[in-house]
Length: 386
Image (cartoon, rainbow, N blue to C red):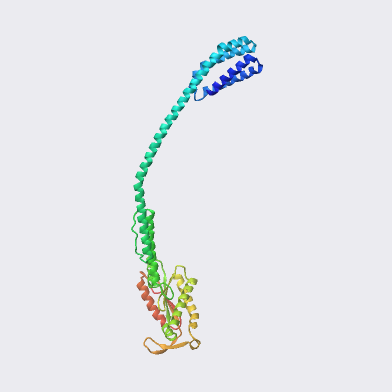
């Protein structure tokens, strides 16, 4: 609409100049402005303001008809006729058209102002509604947040207490947390950790203080586990012969050194001929135990005897090694001549029992060990009796 107004005013100015100075170049400029007027009107008709184009359609047709008549007069250079048409037709029609366009612009401006005012009111209402729901959300979430914070605080305190208790050695402590959230899962992990630490503590207390090998509890647990799993296994009971005589002759420290070196020799033999799942234990004194597979039992026993046969002479002084015997008292206090230390390995296989048990295996080991100790030199024996 604004472009139409400016075009009409420009045409009026060109038309006045043309009628005064009668310059042919102004005729061409007037034609261009007229074509521009038609283009602006078509844009108005095809745009979103079609109702505006309807209001000015009649005036535009009348204006173009008069303009066509004026153009014919100008083409004939009939300047008096052209002046008459311009004064009596073009000027009134142009003034009327400009007035209509001005009214249309004012109406549209008022409509825009009204829309902006409505938009402002709606925005204000939306802001107030948003503020209300925001405050309502804060009011509703505050108690929930408080409950969550207190719950987290209690859970963290419970886990801190559990950490202190477990670190202090109270492995039985159970964090009192229920549910399935992360804190409850962490509490269950703490309980599992305490259980594992208790087992490790028991193993540490059960381990032999000299060789650091597992003791009776670990050995019994391993036997029970293999029996429960129905996994056949071999139980090697290893005993030093004439160790007491050696210890009495060479002293407590020398005896401890023998036990330590044997405690290092047996694991080496198991590493070479056994499996990674084998257990090496030290019951106490000069008694050792190896739990291994049926296939590895004999190779391990042979290796232990071979290594000890090579190691044993190094425990004695040169005179005792050359003599091959030592003098000492037996368990009854009678002085006797004893051979150098030897080693006996009693092997019991679990598959020779219909219902193997820890008691049956230990009894069989004791009987077989007594038999081997009566033999000369280092020996091993596998009990194959059903």
